[in-house]
Amino acid sequence: MSEGDGEDDKALREALVALQREIKARVELERERDSLTTLGNLVAIRRSFDDAMAMKRKIWGAFLEVDSFKSINDQFGYEAADALLKHIGAKLKELSTVFFGQATAYRAHGDEFYLLGICDDLNPAQVHQLGLLIEQARQAIADVRVDGHAGLQCTVSVGWTTSDSYGDELLDCRGFLRQLEDAVAAAKARGRNCVVRYESALAKAPTFTLRAHCLDCTAKFSFDVDHNTNRQREHARCPNCGAEVQRPPAPQAQSVAPPGAIELAPIDLSKQS
Image 1 (cartoon, helix red, strand yellow):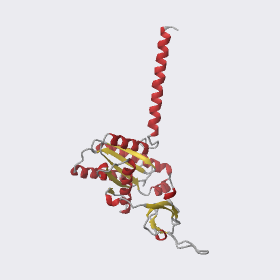
Image 2: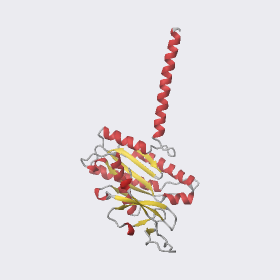
Image 3: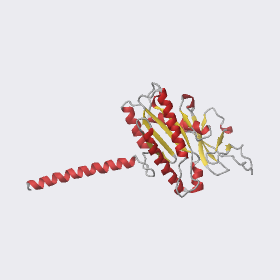
Image 4: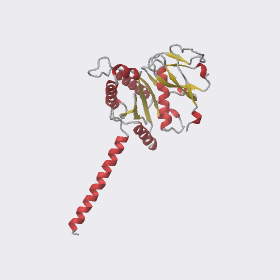
């Protein structure tokens, strides 16, 4: 074998290694990207959070959930609803540049979006400004329109927090996202289409989950119930039509459940891994 052949083999091996690295990078990118909006997904959120914690950086996060998204699907169809989600993703990506040090927009799944940013030195005035910017993001999404679909628009319920809201306790991504979920739940309880900052009073008590079926609009959903609540008297509100529903009385022969009643099946979370 000539010296030239050896150089050719070396060049080929280097090219193959480079190709393998490129393929691996692309696979990793696709694993962390939402295919509809091209934003980062939940995997990317967790990686970004863990990276920030490893570097001892403080972060802030906002969780934006589209209000009554099922009714949008029902009224306009899945293709139009997906187009709306793409527009929301584009708007959040555009807005991410106005935040301190720039933020990153994500779509975790369905109608759930996030903004994450670094906040190493947020004084009270900056925290107030951050809240105002998040409120502007909520308003901007309400102004989003989709060409060719008159009347297609939405509002979002927003919860936000900072990684130092745990004080000196060790914060993990699951706890951080739980704070955001609690804040969004509070926003929905206040009538939706608003922004709520997390505070310890919003932390949910230990719960069990009930599955429900609204007889008004046929939507199926689940909700958490405080362990101290009497399961037989639990009330809920349908996330689709907004009707207040409750567990019907004990069934009797040939009885018919009244409109708005739901059928509940308790889930024993203690038996789940």
